[in-house]
Length: 281
Length: 229
Image 1 (cartoon, each protein chain N blue to C red):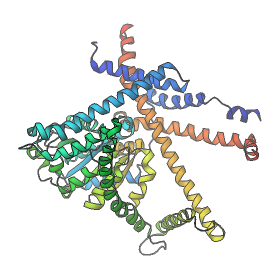
Image 2: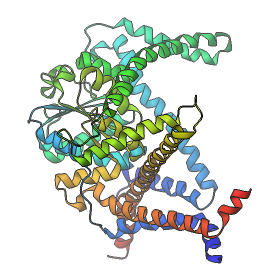
Image 3: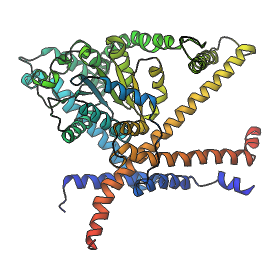
Image 4: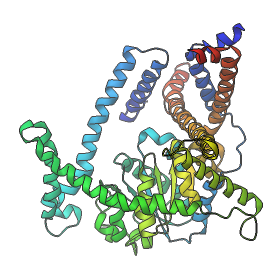
């Protein structure tokens, strides 16, 4: 039938246009679709933080660059907001050189909104090159790896670092990453120093990291923009104020369109008989 | 409205985004310009960040300005990694390029030493342990968990069978390896679905930037003011 041939020969730019409209229209019209229940791995991170006592220390690793901001920045915003609202001390590091300025800006933004004080409630220690050596070094002495914060203040003078010597003094480590660094944190901080670890990751990495959730090597996992939206919902943030939730309507409509296109493409492929021609060639 | 450096930055980012998106219609000189700018600026940005975040605080300050890194006196030990780093640049002088093998050997040796035991301790043993699960419903697990555990164990064994190439994939072994392919396909499907989600998220991030940070405040609002809105 001609319609199948037409569908298979469709200029792919029409598909680009369809995806663009599926993403743009919900953002422009502020159209929001109902959100499903938060994913259990995201709830696990939320519950773990809820169970911590005020004053305990959570270390955040900003291991992502601007290219993965759309997925990871909303996650980090929501989690840091939760930590500071819960009166936990936040100590952040960065093993990705471009992540250090993103982390610094995020902490000062959320800290400013919540009235948290830099050096008392949170501190950004900044970037150190070396990856696994930095992770291992902090297991022996955080002060030896980071004698000063990112802005040059000696960490010995900062109230937020009082009593924080090694991973033994850190209740949870959360790595926001778009590369292989979660594996290094699991290997060198988790296995070697028994540090409890959660991860906020891009969706591309999710299938690689789920086995570590199942084995208990991660206490929880925040997966992509959906994870950010789930976390925002758990915090009770208004959808209009939540970057993750605002993006999820576009995400859902684009996914629906892709599913329809995949099904239509397969039906067209078999109905047009091209699979038989391909089999003979 | 005055023109600040932030406004110029938003305009540049928005126009560069649109220039890159123009490739979706067809390859064109505007896309090429944006691509080349991106490559060049990324390289330059990487050099500057590395200089300020790594070379100065880890090499120059400990040697010449120890007070900046909370040291009482210069730390001369950093000369060793500094020299090793400089030896990498010997690649540019063919006569002495053999010198670059030393830092490479150092890094390879170090990482091998770190990675091999860590791989066994992190990626192999705990994962093996995590597949040794009760598959019969009873006191320890309910029927649903037992079924889930059973699928996981069958999936691991059949996938391993598929990757065992020292025996012909025939008979019961062939059936196991075919079931292994099924599990692999499920894993690839999950991976593809997550990849689609990630890519759409990146597009959403760009569209949110274009609409919220550029179009509304810097295009629509001035036009509205112009017409007295």
